[in-house]
Length: 76
Image 1: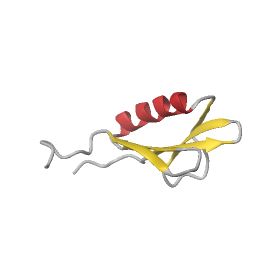
Image 2: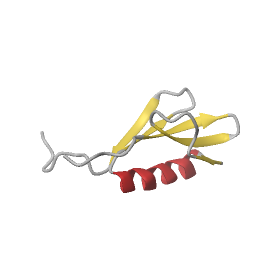
Image 3: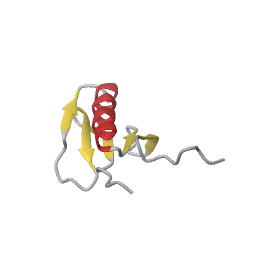
Image 4: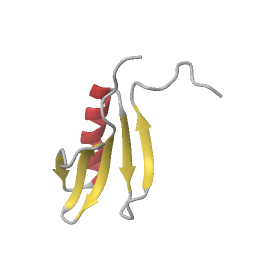
């Protein structure tokens, strides 16, 4: 199994939205909108073959997308 990158989290900040790699102490990038942050997180996750976890304003995960780590063919 190939080494996976860090999952990327899209989280709310006082001044907009941020992308933060799982386990990191600092945000990777800041964005004005959730969509811009999600797009940036997806680009990182696709490159690292990891997951994007998009948190809502309440900080609960509302969406997650996996890039490169899904079983193929899909089960079920």
